[in-house]
Image: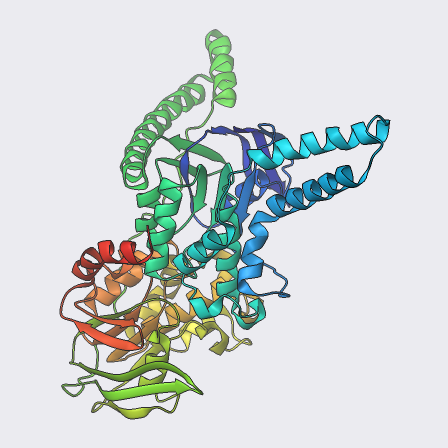
Length: 543
């Protein structure tokens, strides 16, 4: 269907990858994996034909349709949500109009024997064949179903797209791609801006209704649930596994062990040959042998070990100062914006040391409740912070609060206390800052880099109540593991908002569900809550 044939990408003297070849077949569900900077997004752009390779080519089957969702989307806002999503059926409506126009002309005209009339018949036949080959669907119903599946409400359908954030506009673009039913769907971090229920809907669609899929994601649960093949980009080449992500991790470990064994054996062999050359160089009787060994060593292909960051980084929050028994008490809390009610009569009591999760679709009030707890907004009812509470708050816009004049190292150094100061470079490396990166000014960092830096800073400050709103959106798998381990060991109180099921599992001991303007308390782990609600959520979304 799609053949990647010997592609290579080079820039500024650096080879991103070279001589990469593989085939994407019908119904392949591929996870494109690799460390940040390995070239995953670049490879996806080349397959999508939005970027070209220095060498090699992409061979596609005739009439193949590819849908591509990048990480960052530039869209125009000139219509309603429903109208924008309906653009997915542009081909259908265009062909229908052309066919209707041709049929009208043939009804009006009487020159049945003319060449012009015969041309109209041929055009009508050709367009009619293309039109009737398209799947007949209820376009309005499909648009509405897909939009609701990805979190939009009925009242959102006629709102202007300009009223929505970039994350929500990204969802609209994803809906358009899914509705077009392309032969190959390319998705770069599609779950970054959607809630758990929407992720469930997307999973079901990709598994049961989509054709071939290639996805880049740091969401373990998502890629494990949808993929049957894993392609890893590392050190300029690829490894192709007919395996899900979890199975791929096991196979990769075995591969690296084999590489390491071969590397050690080759190193030993080279040392022996070099000793031979050193011993007999200049000896007349061994001249030919020495020359032969030297030529062999020059031509020897050195075994490379794949880049796997095996450095042990165990980060711990500073001990939490002792707080009162009840860090957060909420009673009969109501929040309205004009005539719109976010939630009403909400109550919750959070005890010292509890780790809780706020879950629910985007727009149901999770972030609003956090703002109420932080005393950032006015509300009706009681919202009380307990005795001796030191709040550590990570908002989705936390990156904007960093000092742009400081370097990466200076940003961390000014808050690091005690022994951890000796590990600053190690710590920054765990969050993908290494080499010259640590000397960069905050002002030149990307949005993702700033987010990761803000997380590092938070990890070093002493707090007894942590409130984290979608902290993993820009973290790779290793960085998420570092953060998760730190949160598990944290001896204070934690409120966590996240759509990342794998990250939540094992952390949250209690769940507050935000749904239909109400806040419901569930005395169960996030694991149990998700399992119990999975079937119900799937039914609600008509899966």
